[in-house]
Image 1: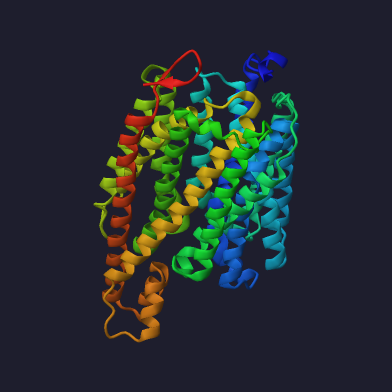
Image 2: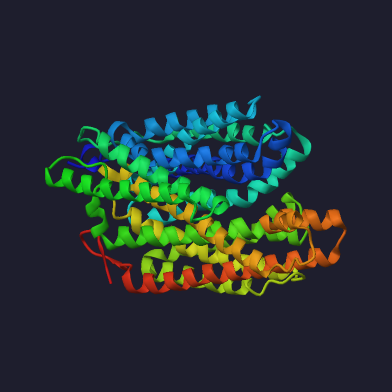
Length: 513
């Protein structure tokens, strides 16, 4: 029994579904804005709420950890009880969480409010992806995915621009209040325009599967987040990663046992037998890995080395979004003609070219050169991300699109978190190894080694152009190495896409080479 048989009008609701996707994209924009705006507001929060470094870390991490806990259950609940219903609940929670964050009068209240915000966010993206699987067929789904992903990525440069303006003219809570009008519009539009959909076959909730997957993902996420500051060899980090990995292995074994006993598992592991799902998901994760590393590094170069402010940094990221929009528009028209294999490979090839060009960045590089290589990366993103997402989502049945989309989202989330942690470690190690700080007091030298931001502050305080040059040169060297690593990942992804990603649709919906 399928959703289409019960509701034959699901894919026959005219332009309503495009308006609904627009509404869901607004929700995704709010989700992404929150990620970039908060980092910008941390210094202000530290002063206004007298937050310690550890508390600031938890303001950020609480959100990410909740995403790790709830992403898979979110998709399952949407399938079981109604995707529209839970999307509306998630939007409402996200709006309430934003309001509470804005008016938090203490650090502990803000951290608790961020947890609530994370609960809403955990449902938004997987349910948005699941709606695409239900309401759009293979022919027009790439265009719908391009719209959604365009909204997600457009928020990254908009965050610093909007956040910088708000923090300059208003109090810090305004960076959370910008979510409210977006959420309200999305709530009204989803309520009016989006039909309800759910899996017609009701199954018992796999509580053991939920517990194993949620705690396992939390362990991996927490370990990756803390690794950059505490080091990968730290006992707490090793223990967190090891426990997370063991629990995820137990989760897989438990899900296989459930399937053998003809019981409904939380995750249908047979999805990984589909090349479309497996390689589409892995290639989406590769995009996240490289992109998160770039978004972590480039703002530091622009602000600490080039001396630009947060709003200016946002403007310099706009060419990447321009390239992404152009790439998305082009690939939405070509996807059915050239197939996912070529579309993804071409996208990663553009990304590789842009990243290699980025390794030529120097202390005094021209603005046009930065615009060039970030724009080329954006063009590659526009080709690769929607095509890889379509390959993965196209393998999902409408009945289980929620939990399948949640699985894709969870893997992407972990990939992005690990990307920031691993690439951050590469960046930090390369930066420290390049520094020559002989003659400086030990405490001053250690402060400089801590981060380029701290190093630049010390150089300015000491009024030492020579020290500033040493620090800036070391950071640019480390950024070049990090971009080479990302470029290598992109080149590997080109090869993987060409070798493993299926291309043409067969009658069964699977793709063949």
